[in-house]
Image (cartoon, rainbow, N blue to C red; front, side, top):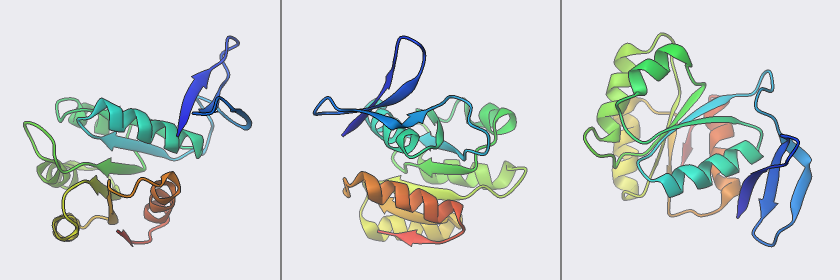
Amino acid sequence: MAHVITSRDGRRGLRSDSGEESSEAPITATDPGRSRILVVDDSPTVIAVVRAILQGAGYEVEALGSFIALPQLLCDHCPDLILLDLEMPAMDGQAMGHFIRRYQDRPIPILIYSSRPLEELRAAAADLGAAGYLSKSRRDPGFLVEGVRAALGGGALTS
């Protein structure tokens, strides 16, 4: 597992669980041309892990733990992709997906990322016109990064 670290001089990078630091791919807060990913998940642990993985791959990541701030965020900082959990309190992810589709200014790809059974992920993706779905049971960081790349590139991804 990789963790995002910030050095004393403000540079950001990754540190593996073994303590190795990566200086080959520093993470900068404002890198022009980076894709912005919005992670919507109620688990702070999932958000932290997904953020570290995607930032390590060069993506700019914002996160929401609930629906409350979603409308304003979509107006202020429209993401290039939404990574959406289906199991959310107050308003489930599928209802959020319908809200996004109804009020988006431009088409935003949605990639469902949930621990529900694959049949439910498949049905939700079809219902939302999502770019694809990924099961949280796949714990391979490379799989998540490839799924995001495929969704951003217009490809559909399932598993």
